[in-house]
Image (tube, one colour):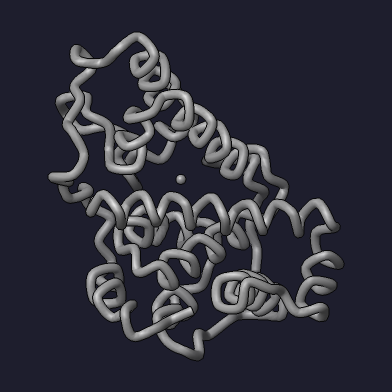
Length: 217
């Protein structure tokens, strides 16, 4: 695997994951479907606190990858998980900051982060999260055969580093634990700090997947 670090860029299979496999596996990175559970707040309708968070989101580094996942639509309404953050600016601001830290301040290789995110997307049955990161994963160096096979019980993982990332994240998602050998393998690759960053990456994107799923984004 090759790729830079996250500071250079920014966003277990079960039976219930079948729909995610069908929807997410179509290679589409198009617009996010509207949610009837989330109010469509235009910039003119925002409270001062919401407006501050809105400007942080649209003016931040996520705009670098708007071609992969639009931050806002043509009317200025934020996309799914970002729009949900406006519901509670106090909590949403903290979550937005965590997302920026995970995407732009982590020292994990880009491919490792994106492989972790796609693994979370499959486990949480979240097609939106998959579509938002499928092309980012490709551009960061995750092999096509890995992307296509992540929806199976035996994904094709290129090299021991990829197997370590996948094993670490799936261990947390399926068993709520990480095997000692897997922990030490990731630690040897990226230090104990890298272990922490991988845990936080998986946790943050699980939260985002839950937001998408709960609000039916």
